[in-house]
Length: 208
Image (cartoon, rainbow, N blue to C red; front, top):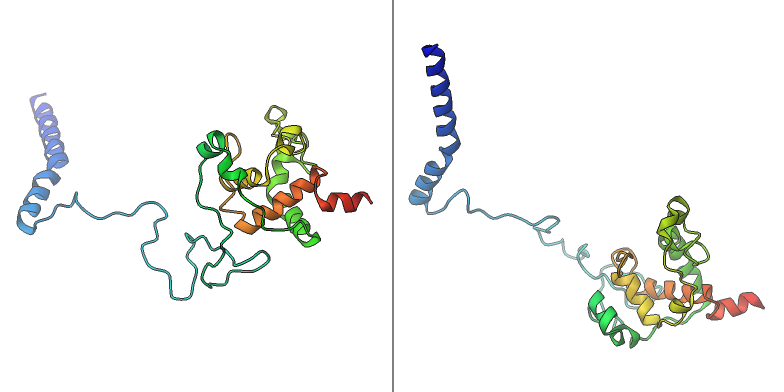
């Protein structure tokens, strides 16, 4: 019994020594070499540790094209239409920040076609093909998750800039899509939403 107890005591002592062995060793290394293993550089998640090669566009860049329907292939970002950053708090308490934005993209057939393409790619899953918010795929699966109707009076009373802001940074239950839909493409979606609301030129042409 005493032998087994002795082995148990030795085992516990060795485990205690092993668990704390790094601390004095680390302290000794810090005293000798001037640094500790606990003090070392680390990187944040998704942090780019190397500069991008010359002539490429980093993923973290705004990557704004110079105009709608233009492609950014690494040229300097020259668009003056991109608004400064704003927040959900701005949209809730200072809506003039987004209401003052002017839609730089006219609702041409090309813009409406691009807006429809993006809407069906990103927005239709929640808002539905008609924008009513009751025919989206998410709502069909989970009726309790009926989404905001884009064709309702509230949405129709919002400015183009407000809808742009919703796409860019989201608000309440709607997530931000600024990382998926670029600056000018957001305005194409705004134009298409106006068409769904029966307010855009494309809707008037379709009714003729």
